[in-house]
Amino acid sequence: MALARSDSALGAFYRRLCSRMDTPRANTAVAHKLARMVYFMLTAG
Image 1: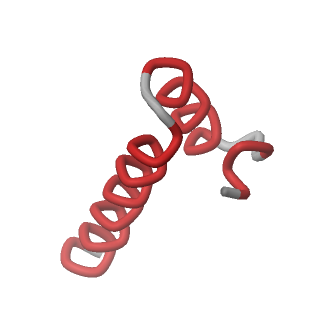
Image 2: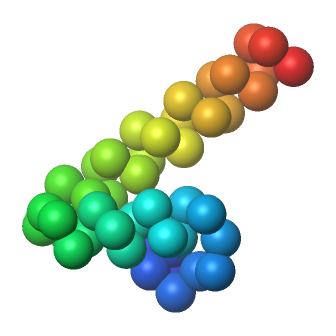
């Protein structure tokens, strides 16, 4: 939820999603994107 006020790229992505869909689905989508980012950082370096 802190992404709603963040100036980062993830914050912008979250705000774009919120304009297209409801907030709980946007939260899930951003959490999934963040989980994929962490996974790829851990596996690929």
